[in-house]
Image 1 (tube, rainbow, N blue to C red):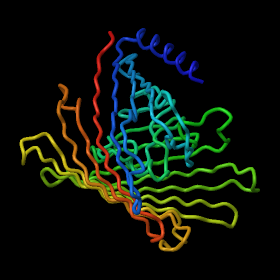
Image 2 (cartoon, rainbow, N blue to C red; image 1 turned 135 degrees about the horizontal axis):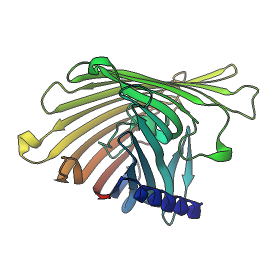
Image 3 (cartoon, one colour; image 1 turned 180 degrees about the vertical axis):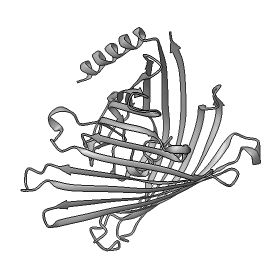
Image 4 (cartoon, rainbow, N blue to C red; image 1 turned 90 degrees about the horizontal axis):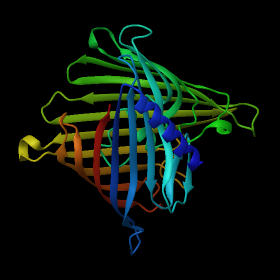
Length: 359
């Protein structure tokens, strides 16, 4: 598998160099993690790791056609890896490689201000496609397994009239970017995403996904419906308030299960107050793995998470985008079932990226 990935990278690089212009960029995450479970005398995790790296090529073939190719790589042990709606635990003592993006954008071919995208592309569900990892923790849709961040498919994106928002319509495999070939069933996932900006400083919208998953042990496929409601408030100086509600209903025969999550995240820009390029991030998540099961009984996996973090930007590029910055997060995970041990975690991460252009 690794040889095929390397071969594909070489092919992509050759195609990119042959194009008119190609932007090359890389982002790296170096992290220290200290984790303790309530009641334990010692920390369950205390160490450094290289948690993630991105290698990106963005070739421009013409004014209307451009592409993106991303490699997602890491070097850490006993990593928990999301695969579509599921989670697998793998043990890695070397570097892991995954293709994260591989798509082409065709702009203004269908109609004005519309972009047709084909390939391994973003999943436009909730805020997962716009998240910049403002906290070290994953976006809620990713963390709680509502959606993979990218998937294979095609879609149309564009702007609403008069600049009142954006829309995305897409068809995906539905299994996420870590499953291909024989691991893909014949049922497609259909997505609709809408963002509306009624006034400057306020954005509201939602996402809907309809999917089916083949189940060899049942007569019927599992029907999955996912919805997200999002809001963002930026009217007050130095305050960026974001909130979203996620729900997923799984139906198989007469059995039905609903999973819910709520996330609220205010961010305060401290640069004007301290003359230091820094922001304070707070996040509160409520997760319920089964809405029909009482939260405080045995078998419940419901929990709340509170995160307090600081992002300190040490360097920015010519476009004012972060180039070198430090993130520090302290999180507390409290289970609703009192017999389950709560967890607390301290994370400090150095993120840095660089880019250049191949003519």
